[in-house]
Figure 1 (cartoon, rainbow, N blue to C red):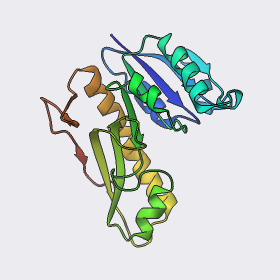
Figure 2: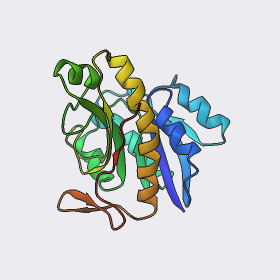
Figure 3: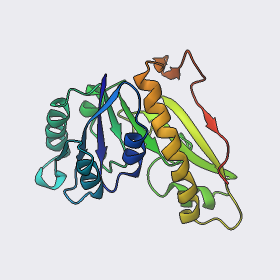
Length: 209
């Protein structure tokens, strides 16, 4: 059984998708947040999942916050740490601590558009597609070996909100599938890239309607 700790900052819709996927041989050991008012904490608690808060506002530095967060995470003996809308930039020491066992999902086709406002930037650039990327976390923001990507086709009348809604549907499919592959031992990082004995490093979903 693999212990999974999920980090959220809000409602945690990707956290919910992973929990509801009932991944074999996986146990959601805890859901943690940096915000006491994160709606996803109540959702998890209602389902009997342990929850905890490490409020970043209570720490004088990013390093002090990350050190306390790591201490709380390690109390659950995680095999995998999952960032699910966790809106904090993590220090290099923190990412090294969980190297090879921490996943993130980003709402763009990395390496394009790291950071915020990804869908607006894609539309401004005249991109024909947008999407999301599951990747292993490294010290460089929104980089790291890519596990899987999902794609949506952009339409002339799209807005950032309409793109976000379609991409979120893909995220809810892609992220649980990536976690399932990790738990099954299918993901290996070779020469900085994800290789899998079962399928290619990046799985391209069909465009959402």
